[in-house]
Amino acid sequence: MLTHDFPSEICGWGAHPEYEIHLITQTHGSFIAGDHIGTFGPGQVTMMGPNLGHDWVSDLPPGEVAVGRDVVIQFSDEWFRACMERIPELGEAQEVLHRSARGLVFSGSTAARAARAILAVSHTHGAEQVAHFIRLLSLFAKAPTEEYEVVASAWMGHAPNASSREAVEAGLSYIFDNLTGDIRLATAAKLAYMSEPSFSKYFKAATGMTFSNMVKKLRIAHARRLLDTTEHSVATVATLSGYRNMANFNRQFLSEVGTTPTSYRRLEATLKPPPEVFSLGLKGLPD
Image 1 (cartoon, rainbow, N blue to C red):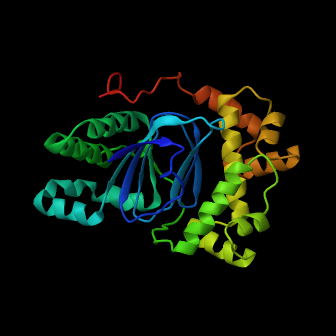
Image 2: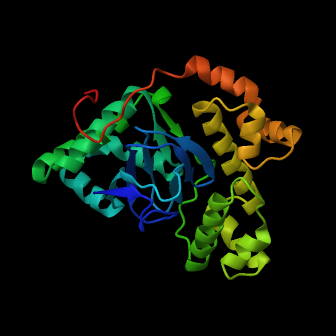
């Protein structure tokens, strides 16, 4: 159980053998779960299965720090199985653990109630903390199908080797630093101290997608956030997302999102709930 800022030395793409339950308390940005690229905002609740690569990158001005952006709970499969032997009722969470192999994103009342439970875990100790954790797993287990999404297209729960990690970390850092400019595979490979073929092999093995596809997905995710959170024209959004050709931007956006940028903005405007303030404190969150 930990809370950390963004950016911080422990942030970045990673894959580990523990399950991870993750709450975003502030900022908007892009997140990666296996081969899925999505957007996030305050109150996002996710669960990542063992060895599923993941990362959350906030849109922040240079030098700015989001204090306490992440609340994270990790636990091992071995620990959970041992608990289940003594508390058979925990078996109701087995299906949730199975689904999390491809990454779970919760929404609606499940996400709101889970956020409160996660914060309760972070604010308590001993038996009370364990009780809040079990309640959290129960919330996940009973979530209606419309309030969770399995996001990665394929199970990718294999432990990445050191070369794969180095390729992904160097590649993602380079992409995020140059999202609106020119991005080249050769430069990413050089930053990872690899040949282009080696970099491409390790990057795809760890992320499930090619470097060029990762660039496209992250640029389109960035464009979606701009369409959601700003009044910029579609042409400006295209430029700020690294596209110099409107026809290409429209084509790539349609391919990735299933609708044009203009239609997407209109649709999101009708679906978007009233803005809410999400606080790290326990007060004000739904039960």
